[in-house]
Length: 139
Image 1: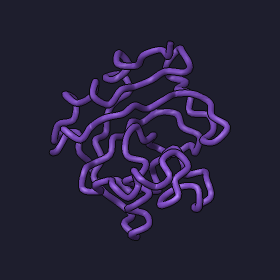
Image 2 (image 1 turned 45 degrees about the vertical axis):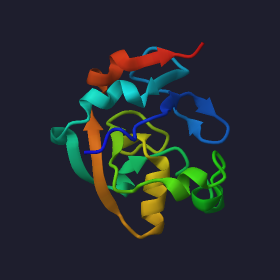
Image 3 (image 1 turned 90 degrees about the vertical axis):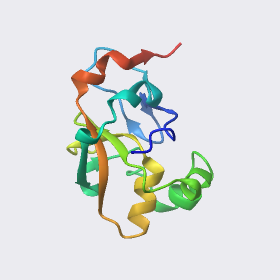
């Protein structure tokens, strides 16, 4: 798979916009998980086809006009420029929607697929125990 596109981070915090994204399986709050630190874990064996309705992602709680082409985090730029062929990254962990998976990477891609009526796609499914060591405290 194409992993050179990997960048950014997943923040575990409470936000007035996105809600409570603390990770209760980890004994700290306001943590960052940098996607480049996970690159070596993104192997073909971790790929699974998942239904999007099983995945909680930052923005799934917002009105549609605040995500997608008018995304509040980027003005829609990342939504328009994202490549939906690149799999997202999920972990089975606590999330505000109480869904099976928590999206770590790919919120613009999943929204774009939903807009295209694509209800399932490939995701790297990681184990929380295997990524726990990569969480960093904010400074």
